[in-house]
Image 1 (tube, rainbow, N blue to C red):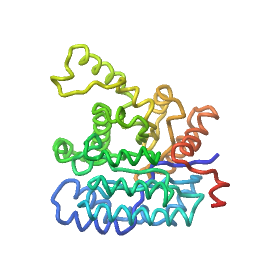
Image 2: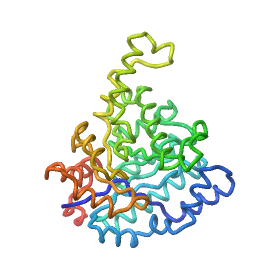
Image 3: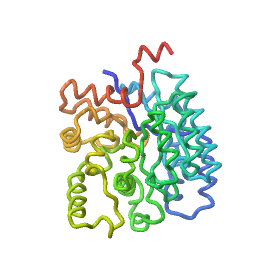
Image 4: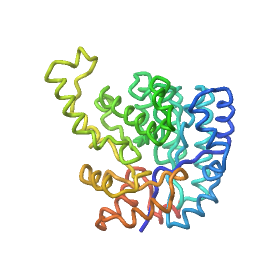
Length: 340
């Protein structure tokens, strides 16, 4: 059975060099956190395709869907961010051309320059023929509900580009309580930041303005599937009490959970236990769920072993393992990719 992993971190070595130069000018918990990773052996696993392929072969993973690692090009000033996105995307396309049956990719954009980012979406989907776009959540404190990023969202819809929103460290406006006890990264801060981002998008009416916008979230939805009924309940309660205007809210065309059920897919990255997967399947079905590892931050052996041992019927297993990813990210069959 084909196994496509859909949240697999990547970056060219130039990215790490630029980030470390930036980090030397910053005295922040985020900079200290990432120096720990970006000065160590993890860089080889993120940038060396031979090292990656050896691990994929060892554990029977057929394909990685590659996307630039957090915090991505959003960490940089607009000009450098846009330049780095283009260079990273060129490198990604080169990797895919060299290994068309083993890699697909999500292009990076720099939302700090929305017009340039919109142009890069077009290049990603037409010239480079990648499978979608990845944005590492907030951009220097700005989220995708902001009116100024409308050109970027318009381009995503126009080019039918699925958007993978990968978590980021909490922005300066919220990072304080997360900076203690190692909480600011994947331990807790990533999920809190990314779920906040998505709820902002829903409550701001982004999916009323862009009903065809397709979003993918890792980690089985960043905790939001468990919270959807609560979101509906509290939104309806505020609506009944006439609280929208006093609270600065807007009237949505649908309940919050309905947008999640129609505009979102989720992946299993970093979630390798039975109960959460069973809950997600009951909530959304296998057509909305895709396998992911979160390489190299999670263990390939653990993720693959979990999926292969999961109590899934054959149809659900095929969808989660590869069929849903093939549809969402327009990944051709093995035979088609070999003939390219």
